[in-house]
Each structure stands twice: as structure tokens, then as C-alpha cells.
Length: 109
Image (tube, rainbow, N blue to C red; front, side, top):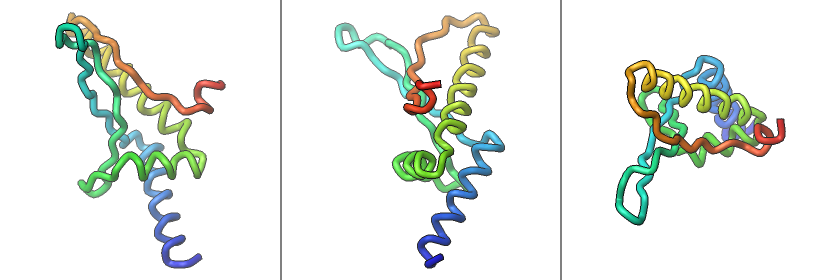
């Protein structure tokens, strides 16, 4: 492989390992109602920061789609969101809606 191709494959391998090891983070971005500015819920955003340096989702999501990792990545994000919500319930907190983006292969299962 050319150096660029080698770097991409190394990057994909690191991403695959992060997915396997459940090291894909989730950031919950608040969503507000237009009418009154109240909290409508959250959107779950996948985050990955190998070696402490964040990788833009546009980069790792595209590679996950291209190399067949998107379903596993999406499953990890969904599982993480459910664990967060379970924690809120266990603390007696009201659980707001959380939007999770799914890939087409996940929806088709």
C-alpha cells in the first residue's frame, strides 16, 4: 500500500479496536424547544479521541461506513445511551428523550 493507504488502514485498525473495546464516547447535546426554550431532550453524538486528540466524527464515521464498522459503532453508542438513561432512572431522575442516529444497516436489521 502507498503511505496514505497504510495510514488509513492503521487508522481503521485503531478505530476497530476502539469499537471492540467500547472506547467510543458519547456526548449528549441538549435540544431546546423553539416555543419556550425549554429542554426538549438530547442528541447523542459519537466521540473518539485516541491518544487524547479528538477525531472529527465526519472522519471516523465515514471510515466506519466504508470498512463495515458502522453497525458495531452504532450499537456501542446506543448501548452507552441506554446505560446513561438507566443511571438516571436508578437515581430517581426523569429520563428525557435522547435521539440516537442509526445507520441504514442498523435500521434494516
